[in-house]
Length: 511
Image 1 (tube, rainbow, N blue to C red):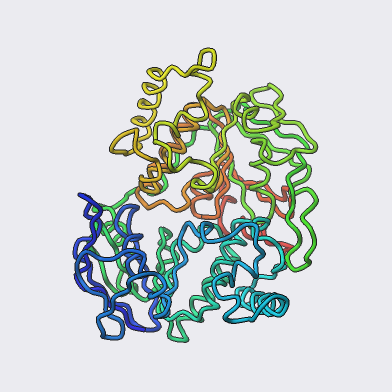
Image 2 (image 1 turned 180 degrees about the vertical axis):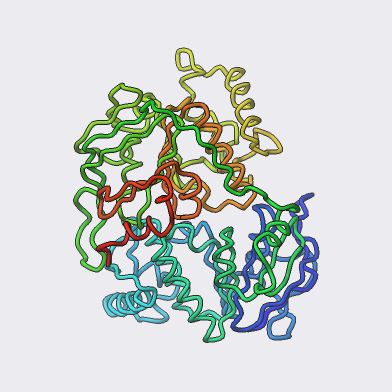
């Protein structure tokens, strides 16, 4: 399918989001759509998918002017979108198969038992094409974030799309899962499917795309074949100037051990894919780990190795069934987030919209949420003190908001993430647990977040970093420990902190 956008405009009130966007996408072409958060990528996607109507301009499909009045009209033309916030499209209490066919179950499969069997068979086949084996009878809510992402991708594939838009599709995937997705993108390209690939990871954009399109302030600032470009040209088109030091890592580690973990065992391991069994067993075992003041210790490993579960257990979100944890020499037994916060532990979740922020609440309310005890007397919050402290930390971390009273969900992804950092800075942590801290944010915001990390380590905060972005993990860590099958299998320092070394240790013995 050939789709053209001709002089497309879109405004929300006084906010002009798209300012005369024109571009064309050819059959069998992979177009990487890049730009900072707020550049207009999401609005453009929603116009193509029928979720928004343009204020001006035209959409042409195979040369014909076409009105995509709603998402159903777009789907009728073979347009499928997998949004970055894909989990909003999944029903956690329904099975994998029911989620994949919830809209067309009876039309395609008949009713009741026959439908269930046929849905299960079709769902398993679609997932197998992505290299994923999972019991399709399991509720989606029991799956990891990465597994849910693959379910959403497989669901779109079952509709045989002519145009597929992927919005940050690898944000929740590890290296192996990402490569499986890349194989599917290349396969779909060979069959003539047009693909729009939205990503902040420029290495993926260069590897996969035939053409790169950059939006800035609602305008196309770059539209060229990928082979004619380099990373600096793309970044310059995105932010208006070159980013000279993308990973501004500072070395602030001291000899003082702040976080000490001995013999930690716990979490809950998901059921082995394809077995149909219930989840059970410890997600990590016998973890011994020290993190010093001002040090960033990265944790490498594939999704499911236990690294995320370890962080959640240290914050009291998963059970810690054995082991000892101390912060600055004081024992901490986190039985929940409140105990962890009182023990000076903070946790930056990878799911900011689902777990980290109350999206409908104000920026100010979110930033102070974990620190209300500081501003309370006899359970009455001293609003003046709260506002002063919140405003100071927002200014310090450069959280850009028209007003502290607007909903945090109205901010760009990068500013939402900085608001999440501000929330934890307000608690005065000695230990910061970070899981995918730059997921879904643009190039400029990533660099700002790295500088926030530097400022925290300069103040003596000990940091544990989980990231599926290997260049980020390598560049921002002082040391990297590698987990496999719930155990620490390697500690890398100096020149050994390299992508190849991390992958070798993470994948040895893995299927």
